Image (cartoon, rainbow over all chains, first blue to last red; front, side, top):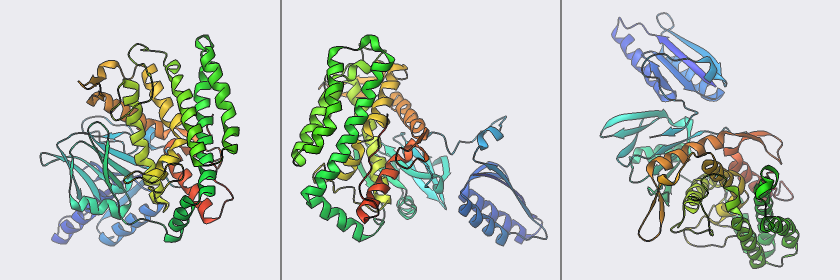
Length: 96
Length: 342
């Protein structure tokens, strides 16, 4: 399933900046960065559970937030892109 | 059921594969051109001299991603795999069965019968779709092919089975030209030849068979079988005999039909091939990309598996067959059901 992950991490403190880096790193590991704090991750339910758990451990629930949008398996007709950096389709042909 | 994951094809000769955390990176001149999480991949295939960092190889082994290296022309050079999965008892059974003439023959009959029936189905389409070009040779071949499964059952030993297989392949390929409806002059097949292929169809078929081998080897390894110890194909150093056995039943539907479609739809043309001084025919870069794209799309086509009755993408057929073979060897199933497709 495709999961869209967005986050907002409070960076007014040094520990906030460190949390931001950690959250971003985890998201990069699991998916494609489509915009600055927006990730598209093609995951199975287990992988999602692991990622969610990791993110929950990193963030400070008083200051930060993470949102997960589930686009399911038919995600391709739920996403439209306008403008630059259109990214790649993880289920399409991957050739370099 | 396992999901069909994607395969990354690296065709740029100056690409370098590296990893960053859980990501596979493709770098060109130290600049990151592509980045994808490793869990979205089930294989990486490099054409030509693409480098890879040891850390990436480590990651691929750990995650069971098959990393294969092919020459620019698609000849298989090598692959990197981690520990052989599955258990030693299964592999021991496989070795014992391979040494046992009776069991080897029984399994060989399954592979070859499915291949003959599937090849016949491919030829039979001409009869249905284009009756105007059917000639006596095709009609006779279809009749002969239809009788072969019965002859197979009577075949005494492995060499008799291999004989029937060769005969069937000859009949099949002697009619292969009739499947080509467009660009007939440029795509003519006289016989099946390889190393090197001397006509465009053979070049195309050989390339696609190499891609299929990559997938079948990976599938066999993932269920814990040894791809090098076969039943129909005997041992030869470096030859993935079991993979070649299991491939037989998939060749007509997965590869041959695709090759014909590519030609008939004018997706590839004669300009995309180079003829060398020694008569070898080599695919050019653009053609290779076109073929790889078509192959990836082909693998995503959903079919209902004739034995399981489940809907699966074509790309999972090698995995399903490997799994069924492993189950048969474990004794969970009476016999091995090969892949039939009409």
